[in-house]
Image (cartoon, rainbow, N blue to C red; front, side, top):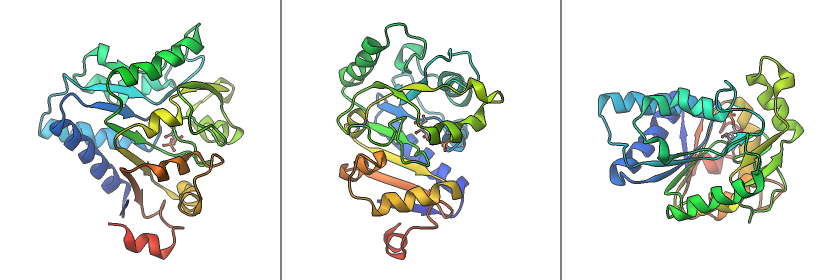
Length: 249
Ligand code: F6R
């Protein structure tokens, strides 16, 4: 299902509301969380809404999608740091319920296996929030990742390194590898919300609309999911065919 809004603000408010509704209905929900510039206004809206109508988050569990290898939790460009700054420092989620892949783990293979198992042990993800890379990646599952993948180490594609270098003042610090939840882990979430905003996402959203389910376009795996919402602003939806726009609500 597509939801298309005029502005980033409306996209973010809608997405935050979906998260709030989930937590209200299910205080012990297991949430899969994403980082990136798309999610910043979503988390800001979530915090705003919770200031107006406080929500009990003491039973929530979260699993983040990914983390760069080689960056500590204190590194300002690590996803751990991002999550603390944008969400975790502002919410009361018990620390032991917050999970992120550890980019400094010395036994990375077994840490990856343990991460997917920890999600399963919690009964799976109730709601997974996703952004999308300009090459169609979800999490850091780059093109041609197996759709049955679990949490694993990836070599970041050239495109992703170019896209994400904008966050690093010293471009040479941009990591070459990351840990990501696998596509199978993501597909097992009971509900998925994919958010894309801005003109840089219009081409990939048009490709995704046309694409068959194909490992060359990781986000196309989501087309087999029974409970997927794709939330776009007008700019990200600009190249979608008229038929998609008409069926959007
Ligand atoms: C981040 C993640 C990535 C981003 C994607 C879009 O945790 O999993 O897939 O969602 O790279 O990033 P932005 O929102 O910065 O365009």
